[in-house]
Image (tube, rainbow, N blue to C red):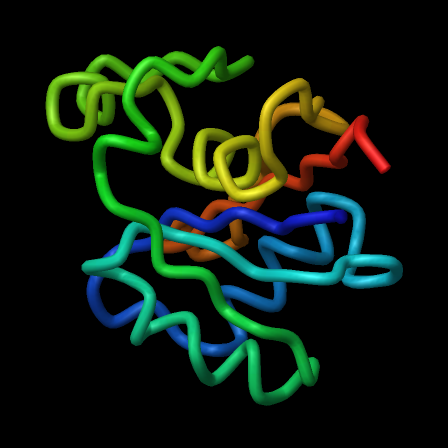
Length: 120
């Protein structure tokens, strides 16, 4: 399983989500998209455009995920350093690993990170 996790602001556009994903490594090979349950409806247009399922994760699944990026603001709000990285890791499952740190869209409204499951 290869999951693209997303964090984004209210009003982030499809173009911003696509840009963040492209900067994170692109959609090739990605099998699922993921974000916080409260944000998942905003991710649906990208899921439809790519033909990929969107996973809506409860906040407790993102808390304490070992992220590469550490935002004090995001830590205070969500209990993790990066929503995008934590969502990718949580959705990919135990033992998964990030391909790299989260990438930010050019307009600054969306972030994306890609994680790979290490189990078959």
